[in-house]
Length: 385
Image (tube, rainbow, N blue to C red; front, side, top):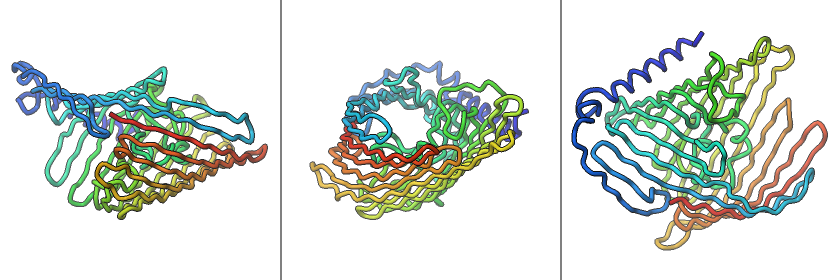
């Protein structure tokens, strides 16, 4: 039987989207649909990290952007073969906007390097909006609101990749219903989500449920300057805006694996971000507990990452340079322990919209069969337009 919380979220989502298409010009619906729409206006614009092409009509808008990330790397591996490689990490096509009602927004994002390419695909209805607070309901596929770095866009990262801890605990897109909101005066943001069951703490995307169990994610964050620091904000002190933020999230995973193999997993994430002048720092902690019905199969896992970076003050028509250092670890009682130390040199030609990164990553891994030390050297280029 579905949890009562699940019914509440589902009913709220259904009601909100019915209202989004209701009567009246402001709500779209039949009256708005019958109106003669003004011709769409095609705009061509370019600034780093913004849409190349946008459409604006009376009852809709669409902004289209693309992003490419390439990497040339050398990997010195203890356990395997040393490799030199040229890779296309990302080829992303993204479209977002609003339809019939400016409170009804959408996003569709495709990753063209993957066979099954849908990354984001959701509708979001802003059913409450005042100067003091806002609340929305979102239905579709996207990231779970679990983890600060995971919810930062791929193009807005300071380091070559997300931290080892973030990849182990928070690497999940799924389909579900989320009610989320913010309070401008207090700097508080919150969210409650019911979503399809993940295979584990870091589940897969584009998956339908084949049973009656759902997962739930709760998140709460605070920032004294959302323009500088927030859960989904860009990394690094590129704009010189000071800020401080804190966040916590908890995920309940109800894995239905058949008779005798059900599990109720819990994961908690806490993060803190700080920017002051040319400096930026981030700390993130993860705690996971697998409570299986099979005797002796319970397991705990922990992860953390901490980074510090410096970015030169922006000067018109000149590139910004920055450096960053990060440590991350993952401890899993059923698998290996992992530690990474990363050093990155960044050259921002147009902020995060166009940048070159040179990184060195040392990874040490301890397993039941021994220890390994790997080194990665990489030159990475990101362009979003």
